[in-house]
Length: 281
Image 1 (cartoon, rainbow, N blue to C red):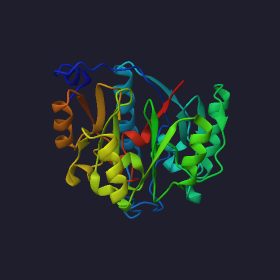
Image 2: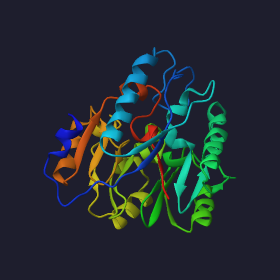
Image 3: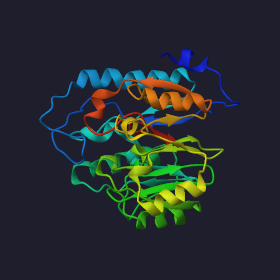
Image 4: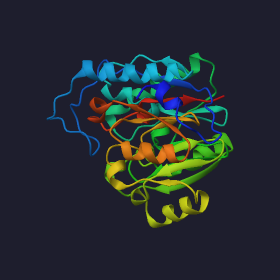
């Protein structure tokens, strides 16, 4: 489906809000180590195909009116294409990532340097966190994952840095090692989300049910296609193309799904949202 096709579908008084996005091209993308349940170093990676698919996502964002900035990847940092993990832009600051695995630690300094060059107010994390992989921002709060990659102490550090309410949610399934693989922020202004209940412990599920009683609950078979690793501008929801069931749920709520082919990058355990770091004022 093209962006025009998606936009032509009926909506329920929804409007896209222009976003500013930072992305990193996958020119050095390979899978030669394994740090999540999706990575298999024995499976070949077609880097040229990964680049072409990533460029398709960039084009879709720009066609929707979003501003995309590019950060060049560092040498020997193949996972840097997953730009969302590079930090969190919220509450008037950029809170840096502090990666859990040595293979990715070099990414943080490159993101920090880019943010400082653009005049952002940078807060350097002291606690382990993997940026927007686990820290998803809405207008009035941050939904914050932990259990695999982010230390819950980072949640308190982010709250102190931004003044925002930070709601901790514990992930329990290693396939959904980051919050952005198990939950999509669909409308950050009006507080609409979609999520996989089975990815969370009982307490966290209860919190989500209380805060978002009308949220879209996504079936496990759709989540396993990385359906929830999606990015929304309030109207268009850019999502993995294979997740057709999720797309239908979105249409029923008045959103305009925009399917994106990114299966080559899924070999590294990431898709649309992983490639997308939103920059907020």
